[in-house]
Amino acid sequence: MKAVLGLATLALFLFGAGNAGAADFYKGKKIRLIVSSSPGGGNDTYSRLLARHIGRHIPGNPSIIVQNMPGAGGVRAASYLYNKAKRDGTVMEQINWGVWNWQVVGDKARGSQFDFNKMQAIGVIIIENGLIYSRKDRFKSLDDIKKSGKLARVGISGNQSSGFVIGNILEKLRGETLFEYVFGYPGARQYSLAFRQGEVDVSGNVTSSFMDQLGDMWKAGDIVMLAQTGTVKGEKAPEFPNAPLLEDLAKTEKQKNLVRATFLLSRYGRPYSFPPGVPADRVALVRKAFDATMKDPKFIAEGKKLGRDVDPTSGADLQKMWKDSLGASPEDKAIVSQIFNPKGKK
Image (cartoon, rainbow, N blue to C red; front, side, top):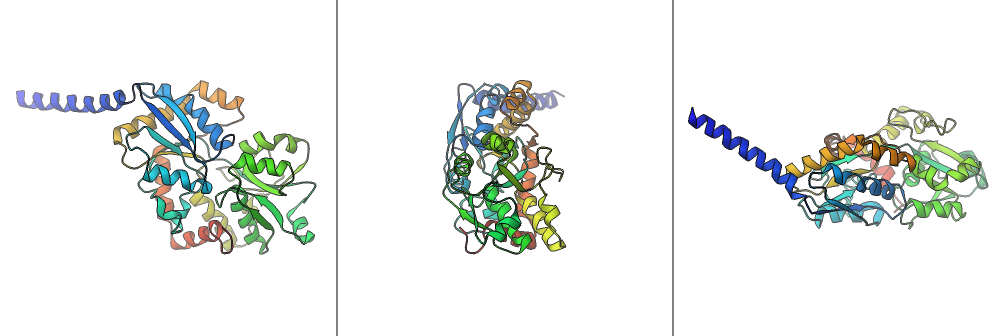
């Protein structure tokens, strides 16, 4: 009986020590939160919002330091996280939308720089509706672009940009070339400014960033909404009841599958992740803190002030999404490759 009690006591001690170790680890520490795009955009705004609140939900109350690392549509930051970041739980990243698709489609130059099967997901604050829109003084519809005999210039930061992805889908649904993609903008705020100043005719974004960066032009009637991806439930966003859903523009089963497969594999909002190798107890601790932050009234209230909604997905669910994406059928991978890495486009 004494031996049994001794083993039970030892097990309790070891279990408690493990938990205490994870909790004590963060006392007096700093966590570096890397943002995969430039300052001022949606990724940056959400990440700085998270940084101001998540620390108090992590035992030890570490300070959170935000660092922007734009480049190559988020590939630079993801590559840094996977290959160079400390693996002790003091570096996390906001992964740019769709970066994992370079791995899904087997892109040698970009997809070989990381393995999302080994990344350790923390969670997603929100999955948003994607938009593509034009200046009203340039084009009033997709048919208008076609009739003009010109290609509408679309400002983007990379192949993961909403304007590039949605634009390519629209071209495939209509069977015609409509857009000239202008690469080189560091992030959404920069190509939104280019749109405002008339450097480009068309742009893309998600709802919250669009309203933040171009809401005044929208309210003034200076923007035409060409299409939207829809909410997570597949519905039109309430802000844009007259803009068609991509799925509604798809007429054949093949076209519907194009829309479905593209967003099945990429529409995970603005995910947060640790690199591989972070101790499991620390991952669990920060996941729990992330979930608690998502329910924190102060976090939610500040988000509302910033015009940023909260509709979270847990780290465990995000991990499964990545696994499902990377294990997609060859047919779905081929479809995504057509959109994210089409021939003749960067």
